[in-house]
Image (cartoon, rainbow, N blue to C red):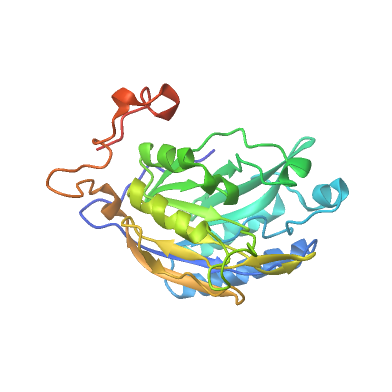
Length: 296
């Protein structure tokens, strides 16, 4: 795995982030990949440096058989799709996070990759599997890596991972400046029509309580009777959306100029430093009493 070590220096680390809210067609992998490349080109033309796309956007999500899964899955990074994203990242001088159905031997994973101008950087495998995910794919086994790049420290989680506060805190304690979330949120019928999903609020809370940027790229549209509610957004370290939430029905690309150094300003008040104020002397070991100290 290639890991970049360079770092932008100075007080400001400005990075224009784009989240791509889009639909895809179940099983139409070539068309879906071409659509991601078109969206990447559009975002890059607007100056985006980090571009985030939805979960499993090359394959679709609501499978009916293992044959469908096997037909859509690819190896990472040697698969054709990741190579196409690598080429786009080099040509456009951008970083791309995108969801993909991964094959490793006889096993399958709901994964996301990070590629940049110098090629493949790394991948994340969804750790918390939602509903029929458990039928088709294996739970992630790579932990939660944080990738050091010239534009900042990037972590990735996928959809249902958002519901576990440990994921956000682990990313924060590893120094993540931004958590990218390729996702396929589901419409919740019991919520008001203008809300549709709790996830945007969860992203806001996670950003605030962990002093990080959060970039969520959701799907829209309907697949085999399942509605994807959109509402993609970019949230700043204070927990306030800086772009979005987007429409619940329309494709869109949202942009925000994120200053990654904002996540490294840990003092909330003259007396409060978020990570220092943690009472690890009373936390169970699984909640962080033995974990690596945050890089102040």
